[in-house]
Amino acid sequence: MGWALALIYLVWGMNWVVMKTANLYFPSTQFVAYRFAVGAASRLRHGLRAAWR
Image (cartoon, rainbow, N blue to C red; front, side, top):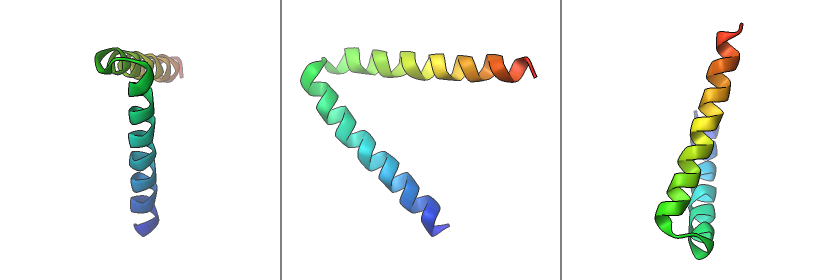
């Protein structure tokens, strides 16, 4: 259980650094739009792959 929490903290911590860095190059709303688009494409790809099994 401890290693899982450490992994979550690491992922969330790195996400904070990525968001702060991205805000230097993109406006906040544009970065959120890109993030959601990548997330949606990833979920769609996974869903389509699972549907073909």
